Image (cartoon, rainbow, N blue to C red):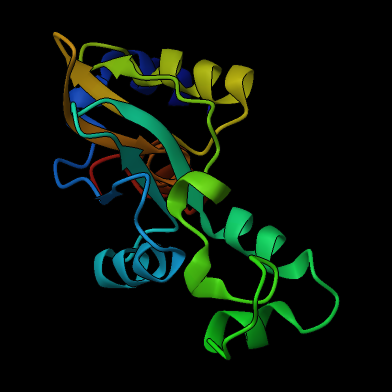
Length: 162
């Protein structure tokens, strides 16, 4: 297990990042955010403005927290229902990505080492970081991607190339 940090130092984010970015606009309804999560198989999507800047992210944990905020109905019931309630706490379709997104965005360069990315994830307390190249969004890296690549091969006694 002692060689995991060395492996991380050799790997760059460009080797670990996902090139297909799950993203929505700030005005996208929460229902669309959920659809993108399901369609792409991710637990968090980026929120990108009209100029292509990442302005936030929405994770499943944020959605559950927002949906659970109202005790009048379970978070699951609110996620599934669109019963014509009047306030944001009653009507899921009235919420937009901007209403629920995490505004802490910490982009990394594609040349960032995996070891540095691990430190940044811990320092910033986020689960996803956009990857930019000269200011342009080129990918995304999830904390889970780093765990799978850097830790799991060693946890099960397999080589890092598995």
